[in-house]
Length: 620
Image 1 (cartoon, rainbow, N blue to C red):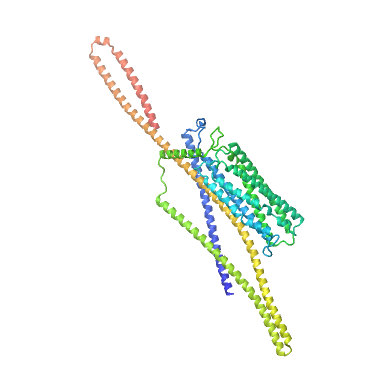
Image 2: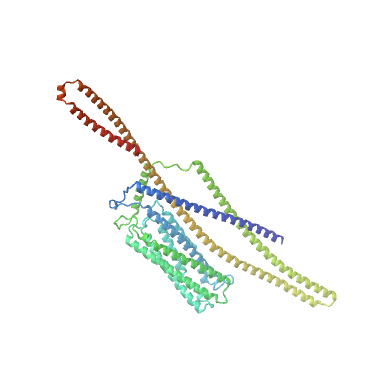
């Protein structure tokens, strides 16, 4: 009892610690929400800056050198949009395939559990050789299902912004096709064993036999659809192995048939899920159905629901992106010739040369983050990562300790129950001995009652052993059932949390990409603004030079006007001294009139230039 109390106090302390860790997890989620809100604000600000920069560029830089597409229609141009779209599509497909893989693993695992429970419980009696073979095959399902996820993950990682993504260059698609072929062979191998034993069981009613036959038909249909998918995926993987294996028109037809086949797979899985639900309803009406079988059947129905949902999402996703899959992509305009790997390599080489050239002529970039600030940020990031890892390790250690304490608690509880039973038996035996002693002291009993009491005592000891064994067996069977239910619930929760975390990680990656793209656009806009400011400064300087030249010209014109006035005064004085003959030859009135015309013209020109100077000074 002291040990039990100590364990209960340890359990209470661990529960308090677990609540503290949950509170810290909630705080971390709140900080994550705040970071997401800051990210949205940053995105909105960057969008505003991009709009402003775009308006400035449209107003101040009306220049476009890509309007004449007919001049370069035969060139193979690298398209960043195609690469980003291919990367995004591959990421979405990877998410859906991971959900499909999880659903297939659960379906095969729960089918294996059902084989061990029904129609014969393997804990009570051995199952038939047929179901043993079926269980052995089902136990190997992960060896065929997991490679599908791994190969498609490698395919997604091979599609980057610096590659050319077409069927001829996607080499990893062949590995995915081979793994898909292996899984199809696995389905063909387990097909004859499905529900074969249940149809022959004595407890199988006529209605259940009909439903089992329908489910066998559904499994055949699902296997057939997987074989069709295998053929289409092999056709799509063929161009990466054999050059000029399939023209562009045939590729479009294969993608179209693949989309239709995915819809057929969704319909087949949906029909099988409906029939299994009906079968589960009929089984619940049977009086011999155990709680273990009911729980396993519910888990199996849940996996079929997940399988139906994932196949429906894949079919819808493929249909929505069918135009992108069937587009010509990198093919030259006006041509139906597909792109070969050599052309793709040449295209990437030209892209690298162009990027190096642009980088060489680019102006110096603005200053980056200071070194001290970068070190501080790295230190903060490292400490945050270490603290998170430490908290995760503490949580794991706490969970392990809680599990160990739970086991010890169960052990001591069982010991307490056994001790209680032994105490009751011992009290009863002491009471019997006291009664026998009282009778012996009275002199009434003889040797026959003593023999009878000895035989009864031996029977009680055998009964104690049997009751103890039955109690232990009942206790462990109850605990096994509870742990099985907890394990199934934990599996479903872990799958849900895994999917949610993967979706959040994907959203974060998309947001990071968007932020990087917007940052690049803002940098380009700032560079354009700097260039426009340089042009404005140059124009202003040229206007100032013109103003200084006009001022110098005005000064020279003033000097010329002064000289002309002095000459007029000199001519007036000379006219008084000259004789009348000279005056008759050149009349002074005529000379003065000519001089007045010349001076008036010069004055008007100077006035016009003064007006121009005033106008330029006002503009300045």
